[in-house]
Length: 146
Ligand SMILES: [Zn+2]
Ligand SMILES: [Zn+2]
Image 1 (cartoon, protein in one colour):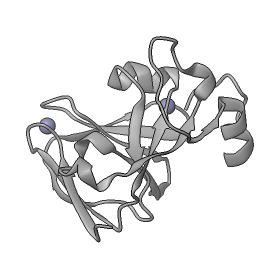
Image 2 (tube, helix red, strand yellow):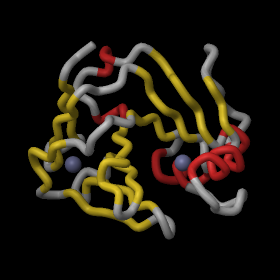
Image 3 (cartoon, helix red, strand yellow):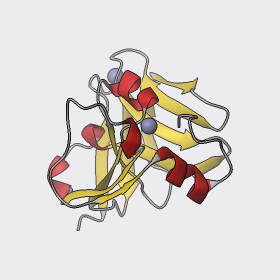
Image 4 (tube, protein in one colour):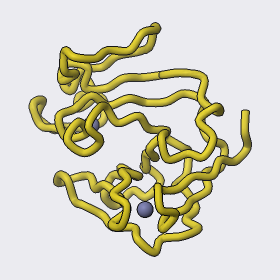
């Protein structure tokens, strides 16, 4: 497994390094990620927040009471999802990593009940509905999006 991974947006206005990147990707099928990425969000969840190397064009959108999404305000790339007030709870777009060959597959898919019918992933990975996610991570009503 790689010990660090680098990544960034399409125009390189945002660049980052991740320590000990996980080898499996987490997928979110929720309605908000669909609007944000035009598909599922495919992300990695490192143990610590990425180290930022360039933030010239990084902007944040507060997408819910408890989370915000980082993107490039020049090229439009979707980059980060983080829990407000918990910088180490940052998910990083797998597609923004320079070498996607570091990933072995999908480890977990969340909001599986919101996945549109027009796509699906092969393989055997853990799936959780929105209600199961909120039950595990705390108290929001099922039906709310992440
Ligand atoms: Zn950019
Ligand atoms: Zn989502």
